[in-house]
Image (cartoon, rainbow, N blue to C red):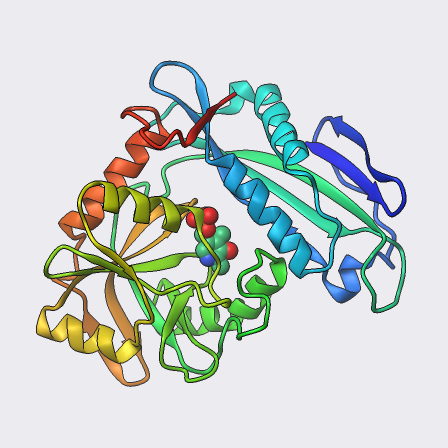
Length: 325
Ligand SMILES: *Cc1c(COP(=O)(O)O)cnc(C)c1O
């Protein structure tokens, strides 16, 4: 693991790459009480030509700064973030799976480490990167998920922390996830916190809709949606292949009516872990509906393949997204 310490007045210091192990922690560590914690998720890929690549790691480094700012935490310079990730990938080179769709998942995170029981920003932080080999997200092939529309809980509100990648957002999403499971669903989708009408995103993935004219629609970044790097990459990829992508609010009614009328033909969730996950069925207290024929739509499959081909170095990388280690 990589660790780098921070102290007010001293800056970032004591950067190390060492064997992964427990981190001693004072019980008054600020993170345990008032929750200043942020994280990132990215992957290192064994490229088709034998090299190793990271996918848009600068975007993770930038988002880490934005998340830190929102949580009033010390910001880690982007160069240090990238250096830390690269050093760990070099040290763990042998752990990068070469299986199809396998990768080394990297988890950078930062927390308030000052021993202090008071409500103010911590003056000490610990930045850590850990890694783990992961296999194909869908071990038995891509399978559409059933999702639960959370009407009892919201994930993030305007002015809140929805756009920051912080652990607290995930803690807030777990009650909805438990309801999803109770109703036989794989994931829950969150509506906006004000009108309880517009689709924000899933607990940890952004969402896209494919219309019958081949265009795509995704909820506009409204402050409570996490700006996904997969989301951004798919917008650019789809536009480069001639598709129109519109970022605008999409209501749950539009989704239901559109699915029934045939205007909305596919829907998928996206994020680093699963890349693209087709959404087959949508269930709520009011009943359920199917998107398209409930299977994996052709445009979902095509986008998934194009993005993964770039990530694993099987296709050209016209956007210069891959950073070699
Ligand atoms: C990380 C995350 C995503 C996906 O972001 P990627 O950069 O595409 O992995 C979407 N929603 C939430 C809430 C997230 O935390």
